[in-house]
Amino acid sequence: MPALQVQAPRRPGRPRDEELEQLVLDAALELIDSEQEITVSKLVELSGVSRAAIYRRWPSMTQLIASALNIGRVVQPAILVDGDLRQNIFESLYGRSLEQAAEMYSESRFRHRIRLVMADRELQRAYWESHVKRRRTPVEDALREAMSRGTLSSDLDVEACFDTLAGAAYYQLVVRGEPIRLPETRARLEAAFDTVWRGMVAS
Image 1 (cartoon, helix red, strand yellow):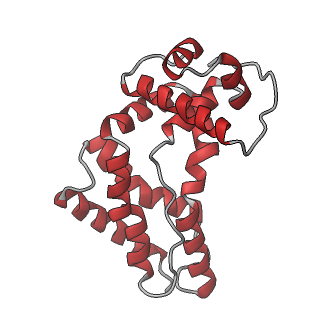
Image 2 (cartoon, one colour):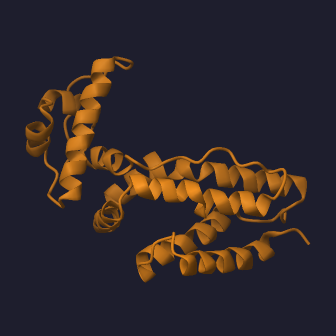
């Protein structure tokens, strides 16, 4: 996607800036949900925000779209390592918080997000760097703490563990096309999680 020229640095902390930013993001989401191409002209028309204000906030359309796609996504709270660690991590990945996020982030938007990022590698990397990586932090931090306590094997690759555990959910949603809330879907997630977990637990 073409880069936008940055004309002036943004002065942080101004409520007006936050209001304008939300107007632009809402306009971008409207275009995403209707599967229209996102252009500066359309954003100006829908949001009422000037080109100059958009240019000041986002250095590229790629970063703007990545920010819009993240609206409605949530970062889970820190995970308690004490108690039932297996259950705490399972609930963080697949529990009620995920269902609540799904209610805020519609399935149609989720599917269109997959199409957008798969069609544009630059957008995929921008979305990963600016948003996705930080949502992994609670689980990865809990895994590292459990490793240091001897609960989990000390030689685990934490990022690979997360990819494997979270990948089971994406397979249900993207490949099977089945919502997480279905009992049969959750049963498959339980089985997949336990298979991986047994290999992670310290001997």
